[in-house]
Image (cartoon, rainbow, N blue to C red):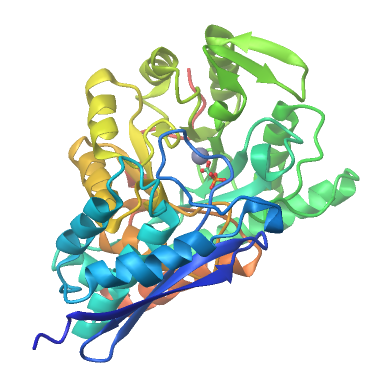
Length: 433
Ligand code: PGA
Ligand code: ZN
């Protein structure tokens, strides 16, 4: 009998970084190896993501996942028993067929992604190779350029400010390890500046400082000062990356900035962002317009795409067809890759490959609800994605990922390529003319 045949699948309820229930899956193979993975959870989700199956009702705010866990232990376990874990495509096709909906609504995307990732881990363990190597299948591997949050916002900070992520990218770093050192210096400097300004008030969901600002733009000014205080040249050595997450405050071409009590139309929001791009060293912007605003996305990418990375997150929801559509209509030039938006590893990989084929930037990403699971670090390295987004530089559900990448860089030694600034459009970080 083949050693990598799936023998048993076990689901259980575990808890995420927000103290909410989530799904863990163990996949046992005939040779005794076990693969394990945990589903993450988003708070600012795209409408077209795979569905996170939650139990509803009064307990735990309706967020329990016992139905999804039961789906793993019964239907999914039964369906996958006897399949070969090395054949990820067949396993994932079986999950998709068993679910039978376009968005994993029946079994739950949280159930399917936990199992799909656990199968991946089991296959690598059975082959006795690190996960990133199993994923690379002989192809090139590369440590990603990280984008790391300094200030939280949006749905991760009680909508204290409208913009969701104020991040930095260490453009002049020559290794992943150096990028982390540079980011750590900026994070510390930001903390000192917040304290001096009397604005230190703890951290948001992904570990970035709580955004006690009077305007969205005040955060940009503070970020530039933090980069300078840390001893780096803004734009040359360390640049700014923003996740606007505009679907959270915009619909039908209207955008409501709660902090500033003003409403903008599509052109008004684009003009505000262009103005920021002219005055601040911004290298990357995610979801600048809402998920329903294709015209706005196209107009914005047309204006800045030669110099600035424009990422579709809610807009592309880790979907290969959507990536190809964005390639042909120019709605973005980069794609965020979140496994639980797709619901299986095979679909996640298809979206990443579609992005690479389109010449897009590809950024493997965590969610705001995370755990000790570090699968995404291996995905970004093994698929040669080039970029990684995990949240901030505090709290162990984030640090577990950064630390795992350090181990991969060490294991790869001289063979370790580091993506660095080459993954961004030329001149990224320099103010827009
Ligand atoms: P989420 O947000 O994980 O809360 O959905 C992350 C992002 O928008 O990139
Ligand atoms: Zn996003």
